[in-house]
Image 1 (tube, chains in turn yellow, purple):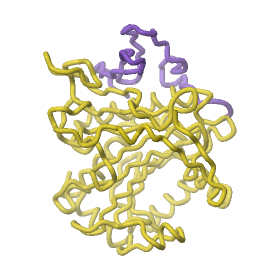
Image 2: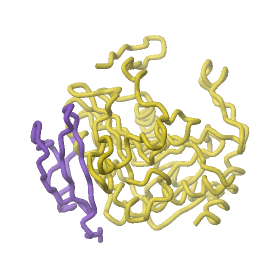
Image 3: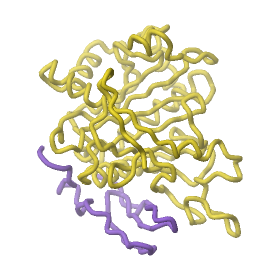
Length: 305
Length: 60
């Protein structure tokens, strides 16, 4: 069981999950715990010879019942590939899985915030290469969604809606759009190739999305991730963060579904490190203007299909 | 909205609250859900495993 402490100086929680030190770390391909179980072989996390999408409790959880949850979402039985290379139907199905997990975990009294995310690439700490994401059910409202709620208070309206309106008006940082979803590099992006993907209509969470919106959200997310890979013709590391309304009774329904990508690369070979200014003063110093990375990503998405 | 999130009635799916799992068993319980159905299993160490599969029914 993890231990939560409150950092008074920063006004934020810190979670100690010391058992995670022993978690599986970059196993050989033949020992991937997210592969299907082969006939006669050792049982993996999924005791079937094939499957479509699997969700299971993390063996090394940062949170667990009765104080939160930590789940692993395996996108495909195929060890190779990525979110971007899933078939459109599988990506659409994944949106429904996310929606189901949001509803089921969010209904629990011990979970105030359901956070769906994917870490891709060793650059952001991936320990298993098999295409997968994770879900944390936080027993408290974490600082980032709390900041987003505070932004709504400050602006007096839904901030993602306001930001999207501005991006559509200027259109200089929009990199992809379909009938329901818009992807753009935000005006004040912190990462060189940061991308936000937002629903055109105000939707607090996946649970309010229509089937068409879920399909078009999957389309936009896949276009963005394939564009990332096309940009420099290399697998592009990122953190993909799905932001939705908190599920705590006190905040339920307040928020706007959007997906944020934080890629750590600033050139094909150079990583952006969180160093003195970012860690010590909380101010990102970026090497690339959002308008310029938007042009690059827009072209890469057009090439990447 | 007040209270915990619940499945919108318009989605045509049953409430997703409550895991309905069978302790220690590998019971198959299908819950239609968009284009998906699911199967709930319990691993030997007690952890939950859900297998989602597509039914061929796509959203409108």
